[in-house]
Each structure stands twice: as C-alpha cells, then as structure tokens.
Length: 73
View 1: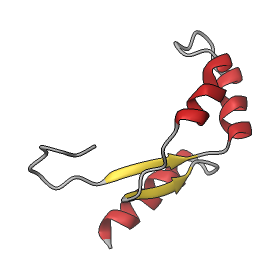
View 2: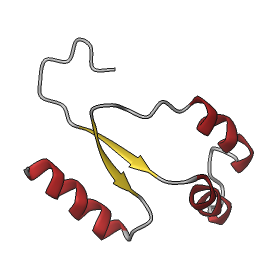
View 3: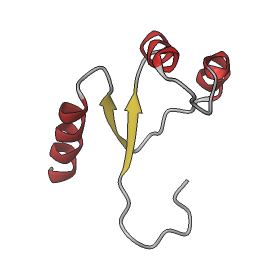
C-alpha cells in the first residue's frame, strides 16, 4: 500500500459497521455509490494492519480530534 513512498505516511482507517454506513448512505442524495454496493465493499475490505483506527460513530469534530490525538503520540 505504501510501496515507493519516501515521506512519512500515517494511514487513518475510518471504521464503521455495516448498519451505520448503510444508514448514512441511504440519507445521502445524489451520491455516486449506491447503497446496494455496500455489502460487496465490506466483503472485499482488508483492514489495514498499521493504521490509526478511528470509529466513525462520533461527531465529525470528535473524529478529527481523535485523529489529531493519535498523530500527536
């Protein structure tokens, strides 16, 4: 995933369960990806091993704060 990258990179894995993401997708209007494709995305998903894992069941401000906190460690 990061082969050939010379600078320091921090991967952030925004984790959410199927139900939460499905509900959010259904609430979107005119989004490029239909909710019907979500199951195949979950089946193909490979959880990154060396990433900062952040759960997305929080408010955007809390998600950002969590990422910043992890990057500061």
